[in-house]
Image (cartoon, rainbow, N blue to C red; front, side, top):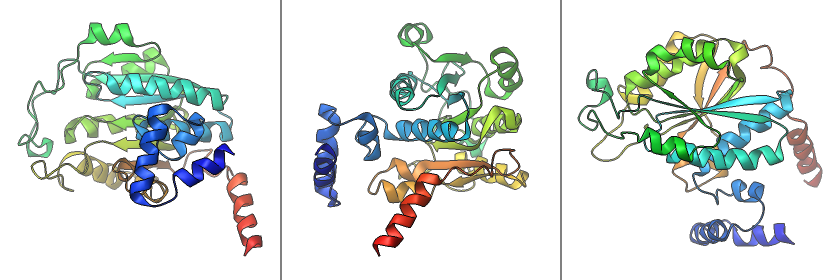
Length: 279
């Protein structure tokens, strides 16, 4: 009965769907898994990426994964990620580590035009580290320059394989540095990593483009790697129409990963066969 009501409330009429989502989100109706399926949660992009990463890890037999947020600012994203992780771990038998990378003192000075100094200035998004650390229950803060942190982070924390990354570093230079974490080796990543890039659309003043910012960092990563690619998630915008965040979801593919070709689609293939029979 609950699932029938859920379908009725979210029947694909844009206004009715949005009102239903807000109602379901406000009153926390239905299960977490039902709410995430329609985006009726806080920061649905965080929930979607964490859920899908844990789902993939479960299918591939990973007991533990890592979630990384690059650019924490005030820490609301990390706190929200903790909430989603607590819910997702009730669904999948996968332990989830959470790390937040930030320099702690706000944005550094832009290096050149690629960091879009017309929109960002040094000092924005400063962190109150002491206050944030009192609130965090699961996340570990990694404070310092992203460029110099990869080897130290891997050595000191020996993180579980990365399942998803949230990129909110604003700059081309910082994002490019963060993407070097994908070169650490297959043992540090799932074969497909869910990624969210916060700064690839912008607004009428910001004016994001392919030659600056996160878009340029992604393009250069793809140019430098033959068997590792960061590609758009083409399904998310279809699954979550009329949502801003679904266009910001990308997938990192490591085609040489020893588990990249492991079959994980039993459920989807069975559903496909059922749909063919119904026709």
